[in-house]
Image (cartoon, rainbow, N blue to C red; front, side, top):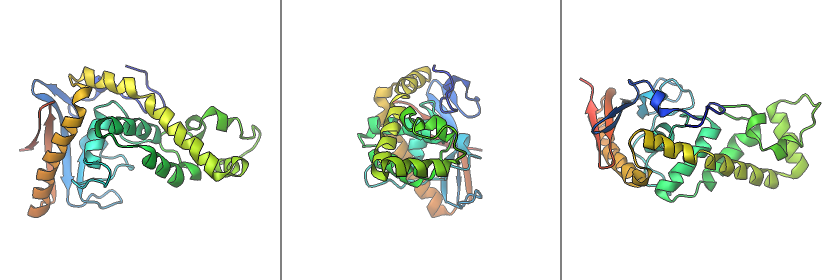
Length: 242
């Protein structure tokens, strides 16, 4: 495993057994559903228990996007948690989106571009400092003796090279960071006894399971539901807590 870098890499074998268990039937991890989460968003949906308490994580349902046939919840499980990346943070998301692209053949460019426009261009980097996130070429453009905050630094860069060029360089940075996680993800899956070649099928199995349990929870109107998902290369199963 690679060492921790900017809090983005995780050693999956060091996850507490309460959050991830390797079993003969596959890997097992706890999940929680709430009709409304008391986390500032109030969203209905599911969270990995490993993500509860992270202010950046919003509950998600079975809904998928137009480009991708699996939900954000599946992305959190496969592309972040089991791949050994932090559950939040721009660097973690950069790497997780590369994993998403590998199992869905989706292009991460739109998501990278959205994060650049909505966050990075405004000087907001989650998970590390702006100085460590930016490529060296951009850092070298900043005046060494200037006392600027992150928002002012990005404004300086925008006026120096132009908004379009800055955006292009930041999207390229996301791609570079994303690719640095490929071996770590492969190592993480192997350590868990999973085959990265099965990730597409596993994603579809998880989505099929989520369609079933999320629809039932919504129709019944349950306020809270806790349980564990067991995932193998063949199928995904949900076991409610007793």
